[in-house]
Amino acid sequence: MKKIFISSDHAGFKLKEIIKKYLSKKKMNYQDLGPVNDARADYPDFAHKVAKKVKMNKVNRGILICGSGIGMNIVANKHKNIRAAQCFNLKSTKLSRLHNDANIITLGSRLLSTKKALNLVNVFLNTKFEGGRHSKRIKKI
Image (cartoon, rainbow, N blue to C red; front, side, top):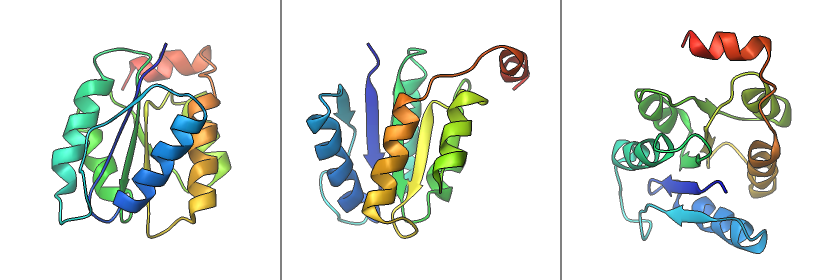
């Protein structure tokens, strides 16, 4: 069973808490890696924590939230075997899983409505990697 690791910075804290409630409602196995409140927090610290946990097991997934989603994405993708995707709409989210086997989604709390963010998380967690011709490309990363 996959485990979902979730984290944010101060800008993403409120959305992180909403996503955690959604994951609990769906009975998904997750672990919050912080922060514990919305006090100023440096996004690299939390992106590194999630990336390290996700890469420990191929079935693990991560959710990172900051103001834009960009900073978290940059940091997470510095880790070997992490394929973080910054997602804005359903199509990019679905393709990040189908074609790129993304294992972390990054979201911008200042750029997405709560409803949109929850829809993106749902698509990300429930879309399977297609494999096939895409597997060869993933190996080249």
